[in-house]
Length: 401
Image 1 (cartoon, rainbow, N blue to C red):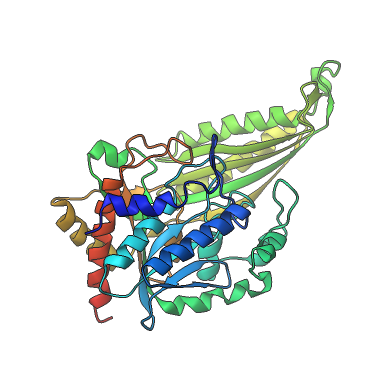
Image 2 (cartoon, helix red, strand yellow):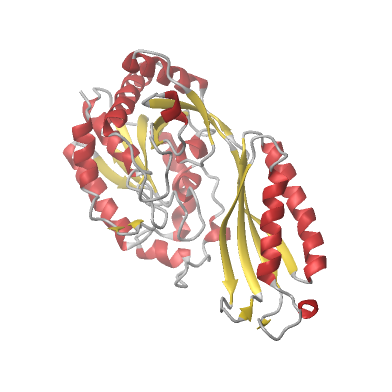
């Protein structure tokens, strides 16, 4: 039976990869990323699976049987200063499931899910699903000036071949993702696991504010074109606009100021605003209001403000068939009703959901903290999730579709 010990042993192989005092740093297409690929290959070999890499850099641990297969997994890259479970938990559970199932089960690890290095979230799953506009992101540069295309090629993936990734979809009968809960919802429900009914709508705006760098002490207020002050006004306005729109959450997720000197008025600021809600119309209404507010702030501060859409998802409803199978299996394993939740984070399973049957199971997180070193789960709960998914996949794989 799948237990906490097996999952812990598998995760232990990653404990020295990109882990430091500030948390986990495993950027996509990096040396740490290469080390996780080596770990993935080792895990696959232990359970008799053969590793293949698709044209987008996604890792597949494939059964000997002919496809299509049901698959389970998640991702291995991280945010800067992240935790140990966001992503790898689902992959480690996937190998435990593949080892325990009589049916052929593949394990997947998607490339660049977090998008932390090049602002390319769910890169690999979007490419697989045919949703990635590679030409629009291939020239993006990281904080060290390295272009995404250069990084991908150095990691052994040809940028020109990314468009061929959707051909690999024929290998999939469906996909289930296991992931740490990034809220306290399951903890408050005292439930070890939960089923995801849908993913909320999300939109990320990139705002460019151009004023005039000048002396912080000698420039009169009336003559200032302070890009950082204008950004601050826009952040506050964006949050206040969100307060009146349903279950909308708004986050000023990143800000870069130039010249970023203590005695200089900021002349240029780049700002990212993130908004999420179950209703895509609510997110769209917020974005329109932010754009209107930006026009007023630009006029008042004499700062040029340009808003572009960095990323967008109108939300996802997971397959009824997969949800039903997961619900039955989870209730059998848990011995009672399992909560069903709306998830406000983006995930690879959501990207794949309209091109192949997909579902998600979350594992309880006592503190709700994620994307931080304090992220934690009880691996006993993770084992419950893995047993439930194994049972569901056994039934789904046996169905005649």
